[in-house]
Length: 454
Image (cartoon, rainbow, N blue to C red; front, side):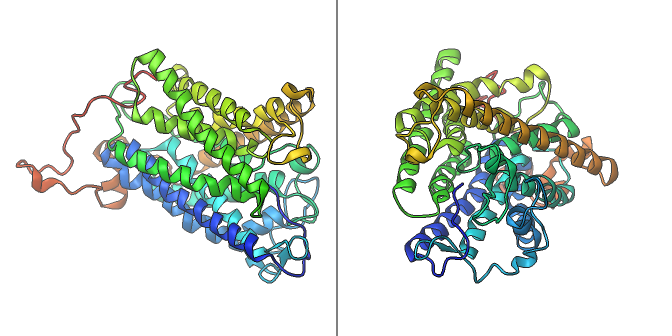
């Protein structure tokens, strides 16, 4: 992510408006994710699934304002590992600052706003791996712990570019020179690795692999995916932190990647299963967007299409790994976000070109004569975030499980987590059925990935 240097005298109005607009678009992605995830679970879990996204808008926002921004962009405490959480505690010294060259910068609060919405959705993404079986109060506490102990440090590594918002920043961006324009490592790989860790800590859903666990409302899934794609333009193009050529080029690459990812996934479905599903289309869309997130500034439009098509196809295969290896990643956070994030991050080492939006300021990939150096840097950065996130998340999840309890009981899970955790139901349809049932059995055609054997 590009940021602007400190101590500018005045901000640029157009760039400020662009960044604030993009921050609002990225914030919209969390309700979009709530719809996307909510439609993919069974009807007895829809409210809980959506609340697991929404609660982060509260907990992470407060944590960010109090210490998260300072922990991410405050003065480095040593070796590029962590920012000082107390220098800007409560945004002290930030609200009147301007970041960037005179007349071209943005107000520091606009930068704060743009960054916090990234933190919010990163936490929300993790929830999809443990759908249907987590205590909501424990999840709420987890969002604060994970943001503080995992996301904020990793964001310092990747986003805190020395001499800009951070006077001394993180080791991945400054020392290793990894390219991650909009968060392929710190958001996608980070959330994917964390989802895998929590899925292992909490164990499988009751009936996993034996009972059909269909998406209960594919209409919600498609609406959510549409909002995610809409917000993703702010996610990627907004990371330019200015309204100019770079943002415009990134916007085009983001469009290309979403479209190509959808087509790549559907091609696999058609070849393997003989059908094209709505769930496959939106899953491929998201896989393509995940892959382009780190690489959108350094790929050409053709490279974006190629990268995203590969990501869509590979992720269509990767979502089946949970059945092969026996872990229950409920909504395929690992198969889409971890795998897609790795493809996008490593793809920079292959496909980066001076013909991309960043021009000659970016690296040159292997396929354009750049050698293996950047590929090695990308692999090291991705691996570091993956291992750190998995180990830390597993430790946090296990500690919570052993102390306050993280998983609901089997009886509560069967009864429906909406009723047990929230005393509510997503759909009050009892008056439509003479038997008085409030949770009628869904008799639709088997359309989810599990039923399709993915």
